[in-house]
Amino acid sequence: MSELKIQHLITLTELLARGAKNNFISITTSSLGKNIAKSQQAASQHLLELEQGGFIERVMNGRKISVKLTEKGYGQIADMYHMLKASLESSPSAIELQGTLVSGMGEGAYYMSLKGYTKQFKARIGYVPFPGTLNVKIGKKEQVEALRQLNAIPGAKIDGFSDGKRTYGWVKCFGCTVNGKVACHVIQLERTHHDQSVIELISKVEIRKKMGIENGDKVSVKILLA
Picture 1 (tube, one colour):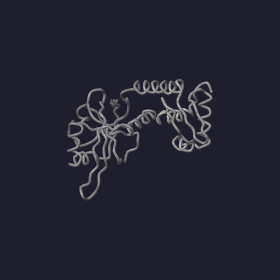
Picture 2 (cartoon, rainbow, N blue to C red):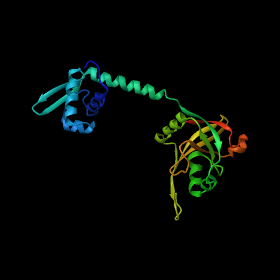
Picture 3 (cartoon, rainbow, N blue to C red):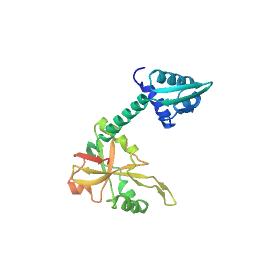
Picture 4 (tube, rainbow, N blue to C red):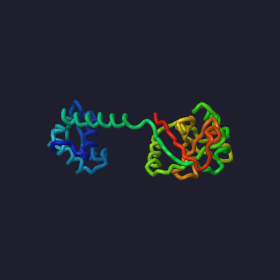
């Protein structure tokens, strides 16, 4: 094995995390296998192949195994790190969407006016939203899929609350613009009746009136990720 195989990268990374960069560390193949979600036999085979490829040094002392990364092994992980870092840092800083303005379900005005939300909106995003949401239907499947990125981003979190009669879910807010003109936020709800192709926008102004748009009009939305 002259080059590091993908299936061995996690094993090599686990050894690095245990301190095997500069020192020999004692391990068992059973514990290694558990940590990399492989069988004991697979972990043992990984170590053998990594040694044969020159990525680790291995010393056997009875049933005990001591291993240390070689310069080649550490270099492979360092190269992978820099490649991933560059890829992540070069990712777009925004999600750009195109969609059509559609009617909502009439619930936005009610929820946006609840005190449990309005106080938090003011503190977290700097304004109390206009009572109502702007609903945009995203037409392209790949753009709908791109919205999944928001699941892994904290955003501005509005905590859920209870008024003693019912509970209300959390809301996450992400800064965005509509047609490059009106600053607003896309909201992601813990509980929603919309499918994933419909996004809801809030702003301190009534976006429809501000932009002079109505149902059926095409709009572009740019969600800022950084």
